[in-house]
Image (tube, rainbow, N blue to C red; front, top):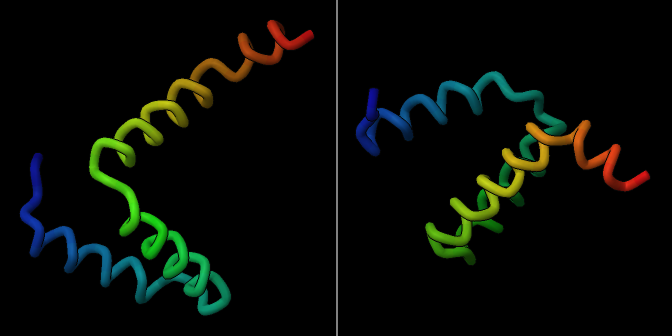
Length: 64
């Protein structure tokens, strides 16, 4: 299911309303950091993170 930009922004706002106040600055910093990257860079970073998390056990064994 693909959401429109407006729907995504509404859902983000609903989630932000529930985020603990202490974490809001971290969320803001993260979002500001995304502004300086291209969509391709963001997608690449997400894909690398996914690969690392899915293959953590294998990577730990290889590191030994």
